[in-house]
Image (cartoon, rainbow, N blue to C red; front, side, top):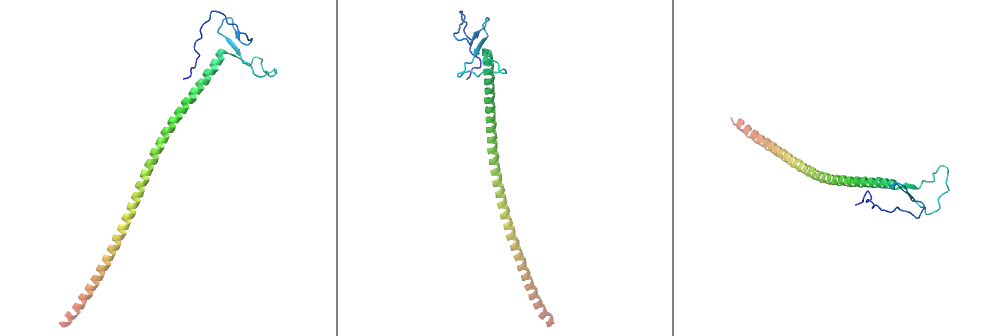
Length: 157
């Protein structure tokens, strides 16, 4: 876990004297100015660039540090939120895919059942047509036989 504020400093009874000329201690004590010491020779001063551009107070550094830590915390929170949303969407997608597969299987089964029913219907229709044709043939033969029997009977009277 990252601390956002520094721990309180212990109060010293003696005044602090620094060897380097860059840190300054104000007479009232709380304001400390730090000057970043460049590793390379400082660039030549230009009129539009102030000479104290590298000066920053401890409070300023802490504020910047706090802002950076807040931004990092917000970014981490967003990442976790997006990760949870991604997990939820992935789970939802897998459920939808499973449901789609189930419905596809049901659809294919229904299509097979429909094709089988159409095949049975066609077979029954063909069988019925054959029976009707056979029945008509038998009826015609029966009529012919009946007509043949009637003719000699009427002739005999």
